[in-house]
Image (cartoon, rainbow, N blue to C red; front, top):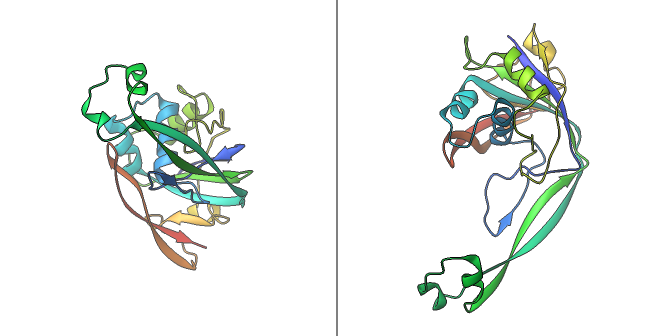
Length: 209
């Protein structure tokens, strides 16, 4: 079984699965974020049905080589108060002229993390071949980002790895339960990061070494 492998390192990454005013990050990449990278490399836009085909035809394994450290940032958002919101503002300038309220939203990031990413074929004939996917990741159509648009990672040196899956993923610390490895794991956790429709995510089971 073939897989596409590459190293992923960036000054900042953010692997959020949920949140609004507070967006926490996991320490391990989400499948939705990696699917987004694949789609960006291939030139797919948000909502393209081929993104969901990629999520179905491939699965994720990760080796956390360097965990990094968590950072938190915030920004302020100004919106009209309830009474003022009854007035329809046609532009942002008109909206800012209304009686406003200010709220703070927080974002978590991981700094200095390093990962080895494995994108493993789950389908006999995936929608995009591993070779085409690796080529696209090396020369992406859109810029690649690690979870958030502000977390740019640049091009990655993706390669196709053929052969025994257990050997290829011998150092993986986290892997999709769909990937059947003949190795023990310490636990299985649920992650809501399996893209099934625009802005809709399903549960994915992740094994942890």
